[in-house]
Image 1 (cartoon, helix red, strand yellow):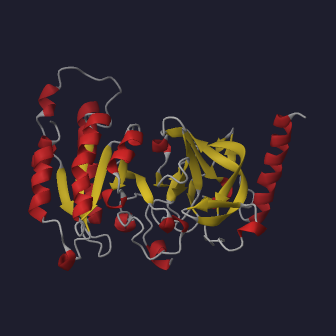
Image 2 (cartoon, chains in turn purple, red; image 1 turned 90 degrees about the vertical axis):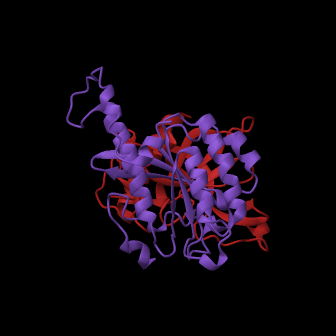
Length: 204
Length: 157
């Protein structure tokens, strides 16, 4: 319990150390450990913008088909979707393609997506190669990162990266934060000011 | 019997009872909405910002957070729900904060579907719960747009 108390900040980013664990935590006696977690909603405050993320862990989702039929409305309202698989489970990675397709079908077209290979601290049990995931990410034009929730590797970076991309996108759409609410036309040249290679991919 | 006046009276009782218990002189509601930020009992993770939940009275059995399975003594207690073959002790909870859009939540986690009809809400950070629930439409299998956070299973800041 003490360890949880230690990560408290208002931004939401600072606490992400445990966010990708999905029942992999020490609390084996908690209620949720017997049922399993479906998804999480996380709000990140980035420079005054509220970024709403949805996190899915495909490792726990065994029967994809039954899931998708009822999940179509879940993505609506998410600005970003984080898809987490387990690098020590080939099966969890196999689910990813289905998820991406499902998101493409049902989420709004401009939702930012990110692929996360979790448990990268468990190198000896690795079943999914890094290259394979990188390739998939390129194929779908989404970002990819390997993380370890346990060893706290890259978790915060993953959330921050996704949040930043989303913020950049919102800012581009609505202009600078201080601007009045009137949206001016002919700002197309701004579209080309992409901040990184990856955000280019997301414009597909 | 005028049900609305009863529920109002109970709501006032409830609020004053909770004032005595832990949150001295705190006003819980603005209009019908939560006046304070709603946070996790254990890790203080923010669940709902002020004025995002509507105070509602509804009697529902919610499994206990400490999760004692009662598969051997279920006969002695009506307040239990079978989950994955085990009976879970429940509390009967009467007061909730109602939210109509899941993205209204600052942070929250959803359990997998239980008994084909409900998902429980948990803290997205420490994963303790259930702090609330939402039901699934029996015909479509979609989540209903009503998310209930149990008044007593969260803190107010």
